[in-house]
Image 1 (cartoon, rainbow, N blue to C red):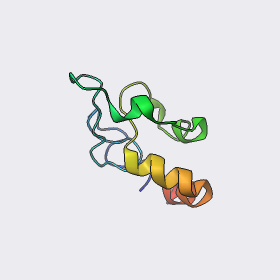
Image 2 (cartoon, rainbow, N blue to C red):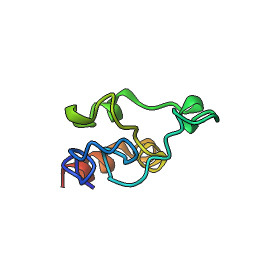
Image 3 (cartoon, rainbow, N blue to C red):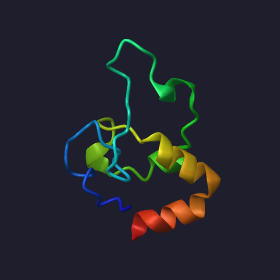
Image 4 (cartoon, rainbow, N blue to C red):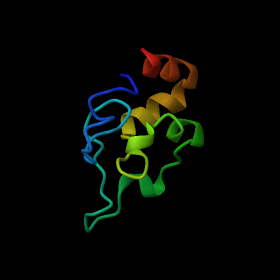
Length: 79
């Protein structure tokens, strides 16, 4: 996982900008998105590359992994 991942510059809003996996964003669906009830740490959103900010959602897995251990998550993002 890197901030230079395949999603970072892809322009694909269906991919997480941090890991490149599907983000399961439901903002455009008839159902409420999973993130509506989630707490997304500001320090995690700060890791999103500028080109992807306001364009692609972070996936549940990245939110969970970051919440479990921010230091390890940040180190993996820099690899």
